[in-house]
Image 1 (cartoon, rainbow, N blue to C red):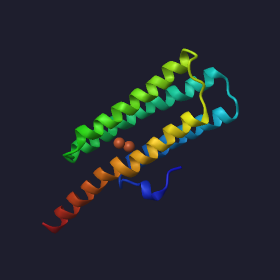
Image 2: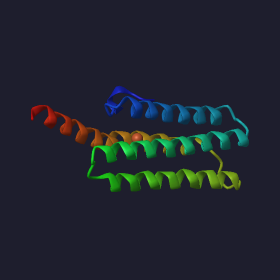
Image 3: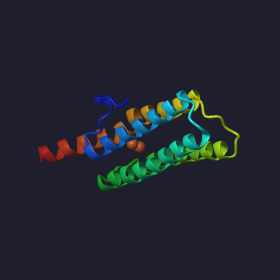
Image 4: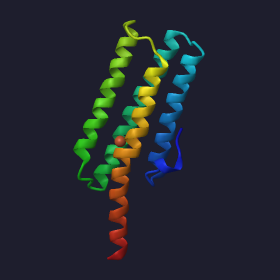
Length: 135
Ligand SMILES: [Fe+2]
Ligand SMILES: [Fe+2]
């Protein structure tokens, strides 16, 4: 669940984060309701695609503010994309049973990433803005 303390003071990015939580939530419901494998594959693929879109937008946002830690942040995004891709491949190959643990991994990663790394660029941007107001 998205909460106010996760805000990065950017409406577009906050909305994308909210959407990601919604997609993970749908996925969680899918598992709880014993949805067929095809449906779960569809849900994880949707999450995968939306995550890539969000990361691309967010990286552009960081580029726009000349965020110094962009490269590190990008590598964190890339490793999450790899992990989700790996889940999807294993699921398609019948080697992974989607479970609450998988969902929890996605949810925990997202929350920790927004609270940690995303908040760091938000803090950077706030500092930049307040410096501009002083001068
Ligand atoms: Fe983000
Ligand atoms: Fe991020």
